[in-house]
Image (tube, rainbow over all chains, first blue to last red; front, side, top):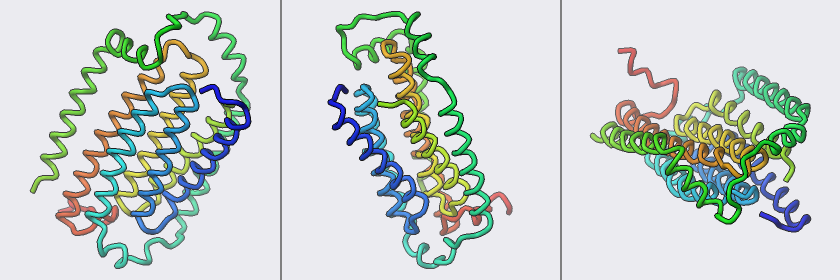
Length: 178
Length: 101
């Protein structure tokens, strides 16, 4: 989306801080219902990120499917199964040796990823790919192009994903039934 | 929008998802951390599609497929967790030893 510069930067900083705090809250909060709500905050922030990067259809799909379906399903699962157990095992959120080793490993993964990202010269790649890119019609919108690609190039994966969704829903009902 | 900032944010989400996936003792929280990892992958798809391939939109289509797969995974995962909870009355990961009998 083409916003003026300060509004864009303010939105970026706001969404980034929401992502950072929400991601920490998913992992570190002790009550699982709070971490489920913080996961919802993270998903909404990611959807606003998609709007900022010009892909409105994916933003709408993210908001509908993740926040509307998956997060509600997870909150339902937490409310369904986590009644007295959280109070019974009060001590299982202590800081153990395994947590320390895992946090060390994950921090090293994060640092190596950040150095790899900052070392790569992305703008050289942009200039080499922009030159030999096929220019499609400029007049049709973003979601129209996604629809055209889904109906022509990606027709077989589209059908496969529908079959996978059907099989997954039938399997979930068959597993969860008494 | 700077490309590196978004990539650093998605790397942060990925690493914190892996941390939570390894250290969580509750199965539902492990499912939430799986969603975090899938969302980090999705952010990468969408930003690379926006920067490098702005007319063809193949990254957007792949991210839609990933969202559908994540929906299937969440449904199957919560069904499995609920059936384990029905048998064991607990959703702790280290108590699900049903194959041990």
